[in-house]
Length: 243
Image (tube, rainbow, N blue to C red; front, side, top):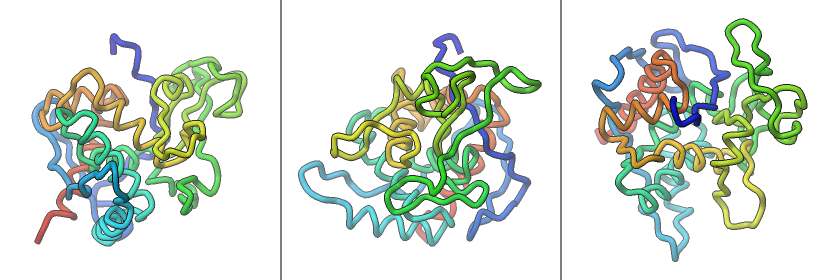
């Protein structure tokens, strides 16, 4: 990508066709890039900036969790990001399902290798990807943060449940709670919000094939990756549609 923003890499594993995602079977879809978009998943609650919407968000997240198998705490983070972007960039038309599709591929919603996201939004153990040391099949990116985020002073590593590289996080990191703390890529709320803003950059409209594929391929340039994200996003939309 010419802008140089394609700095987020997956550590997730390619899911086999019809692999069970907890309570949900995700069909494997391989659409051609820029020809179609996944359906929009069940809309998150309306954001009410001057009033607490946490109870509504939690109830919505429980409904999503029951339908999809995504942990409710993680679903709430995806939903909150959709809510915020609906106000910040309504033209983007971001559905939380796309964030969930990315989270599914990158870290299985923070559950890879027996890990889990706690009530505080952080994983039980830090999620840190492989060293990007230029070994076969791996990009070479030398350390950019003195190991502050990835504990590696030689090479960069993708970090957190949405797998941000330190350099990308430096630009896009965002705090989803108004507690004055520094944005944390390990925090699912912060990571989901930053990913949402990244996807919606450059005026993209994610309800169009052009906008959706441009956004996801900016996250990772592999069309196979985009198809994996598409499968998850569309599967979550189908699971949460009104019956």
